[in-house]
Length: 104
Image 1: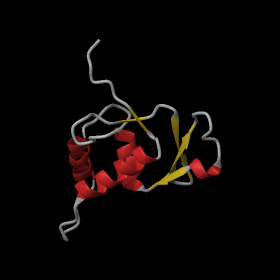
Image 2: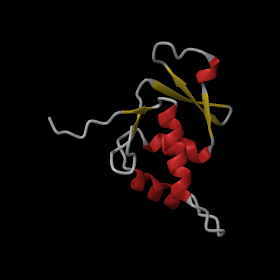
Image 3: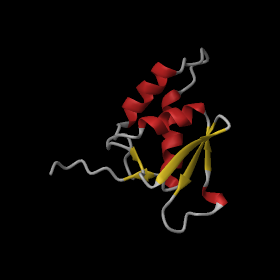
């Protein structure tokens, strides 16, 4: 995924999300991913973003959703930068899907 700000983003359907003891775990199910080094723990905001990625979303839409769901700290914290960092990490770990934007 090269330009996440322009293209829609979605989670890979081969990744299972489970709630365990109040924590969200991501477990890839694709071949070769079945080891404990491939299980990912999400914080509350990450779990919220992951849930939103059940359908294709644009980066700016995700940023707005996070701003609406969670109060921005008064110190001017950059939510967009945090969303970008999280999406880049998901992409790096192969947890996002390519979204075909062409109509059939």
